[in-house]
Image (tube, rainbow, N blue to C red):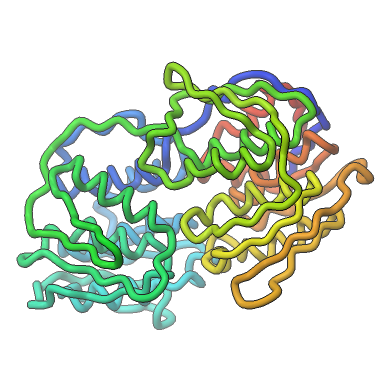
Length: 407
């Protein structure tokens, strides 16, 4: 098993020049470009493995599509191949075969897509076998499931003869990702109406456009964590603007409470330290990918936490709540579910630990969420290559701000 060792450094300065473009925006733009006949010019695509995979697979002539561990790619391509009538088998890693797809498949079947499961009902691998439009114009989807199911249906909806109305049932999670999808669809010529729990999409054709992808706020969040944990920090992030389609820009508000000040100037963000609170209460319903950034910072800085909205973390690349419980415990922090979907975090004392060894659970966000603890102690992180999924230059950017890393 490979690992990377990081020497403690509490004084950080420099630019994270390899910060990737947004994976979420890139993957949606690739689907929308394909649905518009591949006539658009989409620039500054993410260097993340997931985006490179999407770019390769969306136009693949292969009958079997292996998405590896890319959940977004699995969901978006299932809808895309389904609505375009392509006969494809979609499969992935053993973990991907444990991640549910039934809700999306059922919705697509209601709209006229023929899909069959090849192993276990409700889970990949599955095969798209063709599309015969049905008369259905309204479907209902639970609002608290992954927003990727909803986004996948939204993007193909204009191709349906009568368009589509999507009703979201119950609590709506990850709303900013749904709004991102709606905003990008408008850039490609089809503007959904999203109000309350209803999304209305008229039939129509996507139009070719020119589109440049902005920096990834999920990836940027780790540099806020480094700044929060360092004794001294001056970190610059390129191609970052607070005016963004991405919901994870809310990291600015969260990290202000945790001791990070940010200044925006000339398409860059400049991070410095400020005072922090002793308690953080936060609902991650609309920004679940930030939990693995925020919780380690609180656990290491002595900040107590009360958190909700983390239910979707159990079906990500790993069971992220379980993984966080195990890894944070290594320096004495306790993450406890006190009632369904309500969590309390009691900080540990990382200054008493001379070195920590972390597992990453085949999960890129576990690696990058724990790495900022190197501002406080020496670290060894297993399977460091997992960062290639979303931020291939992460370890190099750590070197640029002052860390010493060895294999």
